[in-house]
Image (cartoon, rainbow, N blue to C red; front, side, top):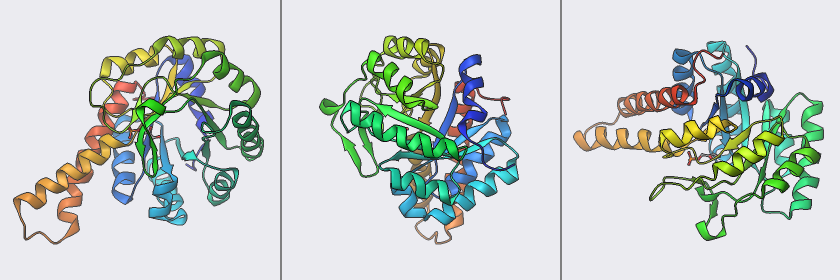
Length: 284
Ligand code: 13P
């Protein structure tokens, strides 16, 4: 099966109250672990690729890995640019074979964010590519993007609704209290904001910073209108912890397969448990 746009599964997710996971791809082992877990669970999913990960893997390898995963699995998989910073980078990804892009104009003024997002939507939709927009500022650290918790701004529900009406994005990431990276305590998620926006628009809300959010909060967020949840850090932690464990036990190990195999297996477990929690098992 070729890569698909998020519109292959997001409308169904919103209607049937489940969420599709965006699992960030950072290398071959991430790609393999994510697709293996999704095959066991028969779930659609989204490969999220940040600009940092794109620089690390190279755009050709990134697209080739995602296409190989789609071909091998037969699952509906979207290859999605995560936090795209410009029209140009979004177009570059689409030309290379991405089936979905996020344009993150959240650091622009509200009107400028609408104007720039609309341009991306017009070009992307003409090519059958789905678009995610962002409103409000999500805190935490992801690649080179770092936002202090004090600078994180929750989304204004009325603005979020107008943002969708004017841009026609296929899903909207709104800042509701989650953050990229692990949490020191528990996040304070504004379910009321999610519910108010989700009720007024036909497309799902995206929850960024899915790592470390307690299960019951994830379930509640899906109940009130989240249909896409992004997870990266938990896989990174599982991967690195298992490598550390193998190397810590045996200082003579030199074959990368000896530590990357358990690292990959650890990520399969993380992704499988998230898919089950998000309710997207058997939705492929
Ligand atoms: P985490 O790394 O906190 O899971 O967040 C991932 C994310 O939101 C990617 O955009």
